[in-house]
Image (cartoon, rainbow, N blue to C red; front, top):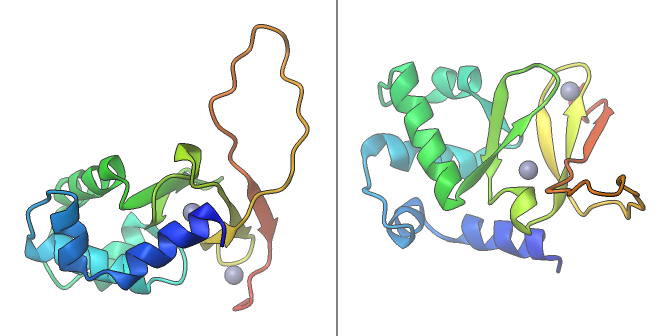
Length: 144
Ligand SMILES: [Zn+2]
Ligand SMILES: [Zn+2]
């Protein structure tokens, strides 16, 4: 099993409570609900997606603050696609050693985490330092 896959499986197997406790985060109702939702989500979630499903009331700044805390500790990662709206999915960032690609559906604009990364042979110009590579696959998802 690849590293990213293993890490995602590990997260899904744990309860929301364990995940929050493991990162030293307080278990608020909102965080528990967010974690549960991310574990069940089939594609990356935007603020709009989350707003629609959350039962626990949260204003925009509270929600974004919690998302950024989750991202900081590696429970979720954000994906910036062409829409300019950040979307979030379970698991640490692909740039932190958990490499995986993202599939963007051109029809419904949902973003899916995809296992694995293509082999790339890139030559960056002398003096340039690469930090990370984001692989985006565009196409049509199974629901469309
Ligand atoms: Zn689609
Ligand atoms: Zn992802």
